[in-house]
Length: 229
Image 1: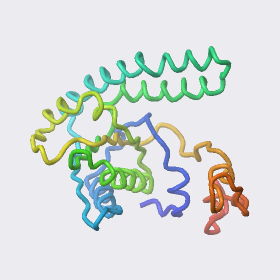
Image 2: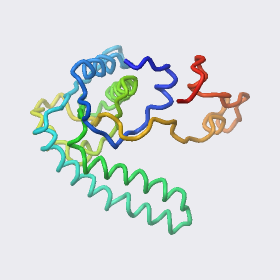
Image 3: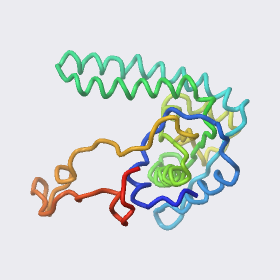
C-alpha cells in the first residue's frame, strides 16, 4: 500500500492507457483490488458482479486482436470524423484534446498484451448500474496501490460474444459489462482538467449560482499533506 491520502486517490485516478506489466501485478494486489471493488454500493445491498482477472499471456494474446479491430472500427467510424468536424468548426482546442485521447487509446490497443492485468466485469443483462460502481471502485483501489487503469466498454459494444467465448463465460445470467486494463503506469499521475466546481453545480434550483467558492486547495492540502508531489 502507498499510504495515499483519500483525496489524492480521488483527485488523481484518471484514465491510464500507457501501461506495462513490469513489475508484474502480484496476486496480493489483485486480491486487494477485487476485494475492495466488491464493497462498492449496491442497490438493495446485493452486489451482482463477477470479475474475471486475466494475467496469462495466451489469453491476453487472444483478446488483443479483437480489441484492435474494435478500436479501429470505432476510430474510423467516430473519432477521426469527429476530430475533422471540430477542426472544420474552428474548435482547435477540442480537436487537439480529442486527438490526444485517441493517440493514447491507440497506444492501449497496440500494446494491450503488455497490460499486467485485464479485469473483465460481468453483471446481469441490462444491469450496468450495479456493475459500474464496483468497476470504478476497482480503479480507485488500483490507484491506491500505484497501479494505473482505464474504464472501458469497447469490447462490450463491439465484441461481447467473442470475448465471452474466449473467457468461457457461457452463463446467460451473466454478461460482460466492462473491461479494466491495468498495469504499472508509464505516464504521470495528475488531476484531470475540469470546469470550475462553481460552474458544475447549481444551488437549490437549476441555473442558480452556488453561494460557495471552489476549494482553496485540492487533495494536497485536504489533510495537511503539504504538497502536490
